[in-house]
Structure formats: structure tokens, C-alpha cells
Amino acid sequence: MLVSCVSGAQLSNYATFLTDPHMAPLSIVMTSLSTASAVFFTPTLSYLLIGKKLPVDVVGMMSSIVQIVVAPIAAGLLLNRFLPRLCSAIQPFLPPLSVFVTALCVGSPLAINIKAVLSPYGLSIVFLLFAFHTTSFVAGYHLAGTWFRKSADVKALQRTISFETGMQSSLLALALANRFFPDPLVGVPPAVSVCLLLPKAPPVAFISALSMNCF
Image 1 (cartoon, rainbow, N blue to C red):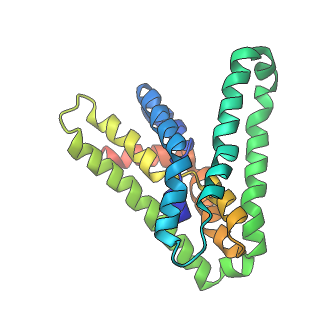
Image 2: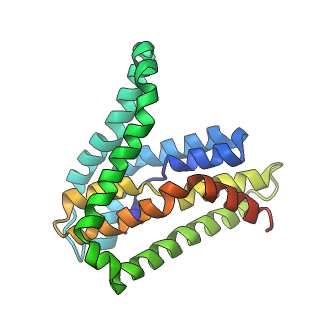
């Protein structure tokens, strides 16, 4: 539920850039809007969907999303605007640092719950997450095709929206799971979701573009 309630992933912008570069601005706008609205919608949806089974701190989640998502983005925009030389100097080091930190964030809950991950329970999580992401990709693609069928570049638009609906900000879900739910198993699905999407961005973009052109 946490994975489904978070905003779209920035990875969708990269996938769109690989397949349809002219649609990249639209992808960035959609991701920005979903990220900004996540401050309200993620805690609210989490409360409505799982609040009866697990305690959900709505106000605490909103505060955490602001700290984890909104504040770094705002800081990055300000630094890039007022200290461009500093940003240019540290930019080469940020991608490998991001990969390293992501590996630590994902590896921790998987390592702690390695027995559960390798059990039938873990396999069922992988299957459910694979089904969730696949359904989101396909639904986004076909709904966009139905809604924008008269658009001049409907195929590119379908791919762009498909990437946005199929790729979730699983690291945000992982951070919320670790902070607000004492059971470490809650962090396993978001970690598995990251593993399904993050290393496969270029292949996913290529395969999706190839297969979706066949529809």
C-alpha cells in the first residue's frame, strides 16, 4: 500500500528521455506535480487504506515527506540558482553517491529480513509487486491511448504516462516504512520495488518502447 500511495519516481523522467526526448518536459512536470501533492495525498491515502490495520501518523508523514522530498528539491533549486559554480563542482560526485546511498537504504531491510525475503512470503511479495508495476504500466498506457486518441503524437504520450504510472518513488515509501512502522517487514516491499525498477531503467525503457509500439 505504501508503494502504491507514494508519488511517481524521477526514474520515469530518465526513461522518457531515452524513448521520447521531446516528452521529457511533460514527464518532469507530471513527476513534480505528483511529488508536490504527495505531501497531502500519501499520508491521507495511507490512512484510508491501512489505517484500520496499522496506526498511521498522518501529520508525521506529511512532515517527513517535506523533509525528505520537498526540502532537498528546494535546496537544490536555490543552490543551482545562486551558487552555480558550487553545483558544477559537486555534480560529478552526486550520481555515484546517490547509487551508494540507495544501495545502503535498500540493502538494510533486505538483509535484516533475508529469511523472510527468501521464504514463500518473500516470493509472494515479489510476485505482487511485479503484478502491481506491470498493471500500472499497462493501465497508464491504454488509458492514455483512450483519453488522448486524437492527439498527433499519441504513442509517445502513452509511453510517457505509462512510465509515470508504473514507476513509483519506492525509496520514499521505504523511508516512511522505516520511520513510522516498527515492524521491519513493512520495509521489505518498498525495498523489493526499488530492486525491480532501479537497476532496470534502460532495459525497461527499451523493452517498453519496443513492446508498446506493437499495440
